[in-house]
Image (cartoon, rainbow, N blue to C red; front, side):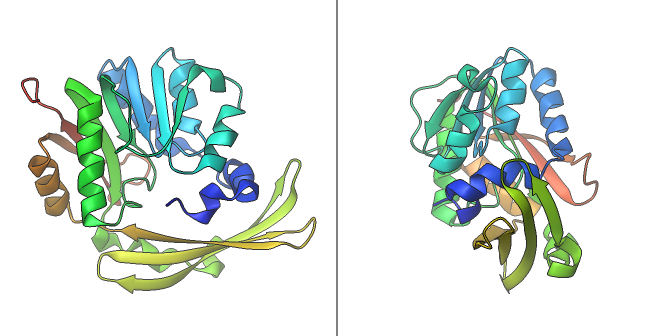
Length: 245
C-alpha cells in the first residue's frame, strides 16, 4: 500500500511544490537517451514528473503506481494524456515490451518485503523486451542517510499556490536492521489541518541487490554512482538477456 503522502488527495496535491527540485531525474533522462529507449515503464510513477518529461521527448510511457490520488494529479497535468497511467504495481501489468523500466527516487527502497521485491523484479522483467533494461537507485546503507532525518534539518514553510502556506518536516521513528521508518508532518496554515505520513525504506547492500537481480533472471550490466548524490547511492542497470524468456 502506498504511503499517506501519496494516497491522501490533499497531500498528493502539494507533493510537487514541496519537492520542486527534481534534478535527480536528469541521469534517468540521459540513460533513456543512452539506451535509445522508445518505450518506457515508470514503476512507482507517483505524480508523473518523470513520465511526463519522457513523454515530452516523444517517448511512449506507461506509468504505474498504487496511489490513486497521485495518479489523479499526474493525469491532470499538461501532457497527461500522452502517458498511459495504470493504478497498480509491477505485478499487475498488461502485456508490454518496454525498452526500459525505471524506479526513480525511493521507489525501489519502498518495496520492503522480500517476496514483494522478488515479485516486482519478476514483473518488471516480464514487461521488458529481450535486451531491455531495468534501472533503479538505492541509497548506500553505510552512509546512514537517516541520521539527517530530523525536524531541525528538514523544517520548511512553503507557499503553495491554491493551498497557502504548508509547514513540513520529517522525524526518524525507528531503525531496525535494514528497515528505517520515519514520519513526515504537514501543517496547512489555511485551516490548521495537521496530516502525517509514515514511511519505511529498506536499505539493501550492493551484493544483496546483485544476487536478487541475478536470481530473477537479469544480467547486472552496471552499477553507477548517482551524479546528484555522489557516493550516497547506487544506480543499478540490469538487463533482460536477449535469449531470456
